[in-house]
Image (cartoon, rainbow, N blue to C red; front, top):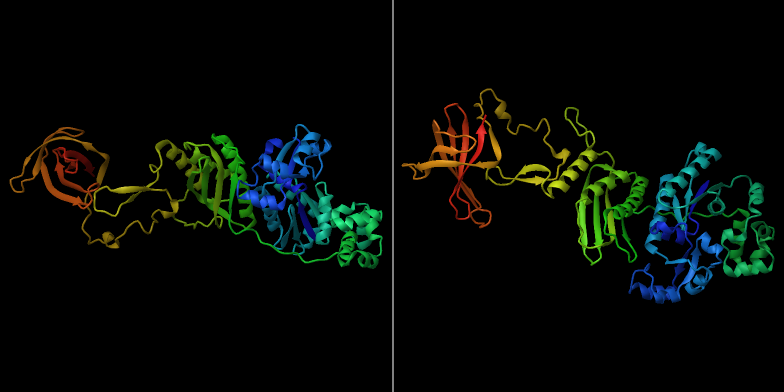
Length: 536
């Protein structure tokens, strides 16, 4: 059994995915002659409409309302407008067609391993590897309805056909409403095919003209002719055409595989957006397309690479991490939405590029004695909201810098997988030995350090200042004991980052111990005294 996934009026459907407001309008799709198409590509994008292209183009497809107004294939733009004054004319969009074809291929990849891209808007799948129960008529009807629903979510109106051979499946798809099944013995199939129009098997134009002269207009009338005599008069290809009309043609599929990369580019055909809501609407369509590809390959997204194409030619790029790899388009859109809430482009946006980094879903290891986030993606969304409020680079996990400067750290993106394990909390096992000396009191730092009004006098032994009394600050008074100073400095070779400080520990009558420091790196001003923290 074979399945055929078909998109009738493929050029029209692909184009209207980018212009959903025109779904119920009179629309005609224009195509340039091949030589004009090659020349004009170097001048402007293929979907941009101008007067010269209008003059050279011909109508290749039209919507039902345009057909009701007697717009026909092969008409020029002027002729079509003369028939239908409110007609919307659009050029073919090859990028949109590729995207729609990829959606068909993604659906096919979810059915079976063997499938082909038969024609624009038509994909054929070999279902013979499925179990017999899955090929029963009720199961096929259910499968076809699921495929129709899946593609309908992407603003497409597909038809699905099932039949014993690839060409017959294509015929079944073209007459489906929206799911069709052709099965039975040879006589039964021939009986069902007999009243169908000959155009369903796409006869070449020269054959079609001759058959019309012979009075042949249906598959049954063509199959009633002697096969050998048809091949003798029209050529060997006519014999294959006769087999297709009789439902007997057998052929091998030209197998393809889904794309290995999960990226797409979408441009707005001369239009721009300058607010968040329409941009999110466009991005949702792109994410749905890419997540469908991921689902077909049984993968999920671990990163989102987003590039916004600005009207002045600039590009704004961002990399958004997905904490728990997912292929849920709503979840991925939420991550993008959170990041873009406070973004101001400064220029209108004419398109975007999206790329998803593929990963196996649920690859994070589980440790029995470690706590994990219940919903990493919800947590990441919360962090995104905080970053939009506090600014980029101000939310994350502190990490020590490679320096001996006290309290020097940087902010890194939060990664729950990079936290210390229970076994790695103690770096030196000898600290747990009974013979090890007791550790000192911990220092609880004030962030930022608190400026003090402190009186000091020179130490006769060192010539350095020695704290005598804290005059103003969160703690005041004369210390009972003073330890220090300890001189620390670094980065002396860098004018902008060099630092120099003296530190003391002060104990007061109530037993409390504080650390104070005096910073010399104050840009030539009087060195400042600050309260660094309290012990205990």
